[in-house]
Amino acid sequence: MSLQLPSREGIIRFDPATGGWARLSELKKSGLAEGFNIVYFRNLMCSACRLLDIKFPDLIDMYSCRATITVVTCMWFSKLCLTHAARRAFEEFKVRESPMIYAALVRGGSVVREAVIIGTLSLSEYRSYLAKAIGLRACSKLK
Image (cartoon, rainbow, N blue to C red; front, side):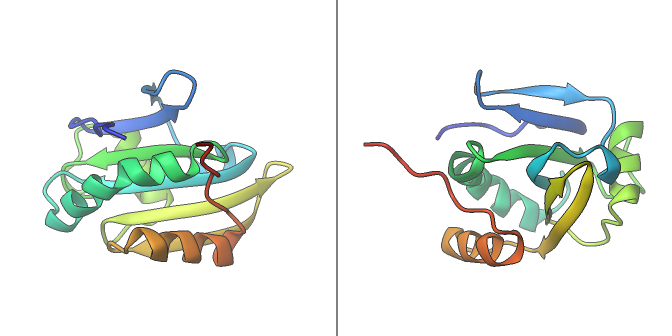
């Protein structure tokens, strides 16, 4: 997949129907979508985030059929973030290290399983961890 992550601060959600991004005005744990959620917190000044940025389109490809995928971007955590909504999301999810992926299973409006991944893993490590931690399986590819 040749999907580019936006280079501006803010909160965006991947739309699998269009293959594009939709900007959100806020993101709270209490407002996560029903089912599986993957939220990628990234900083534009973070070299490790740039490594995950290269892999993240593959994660979108692997999980967008089963999970709501959101990306929250600040320049440098909530300390240097000109977008109020993104700054509040970093604070809400207590992001202290990056890159950070927050994954959750939401049932009836409540988070029933959640996991946090700090740093960059291999795609097979993400696949294994997300399956064990919250029960999220990768999309099957039709050939």
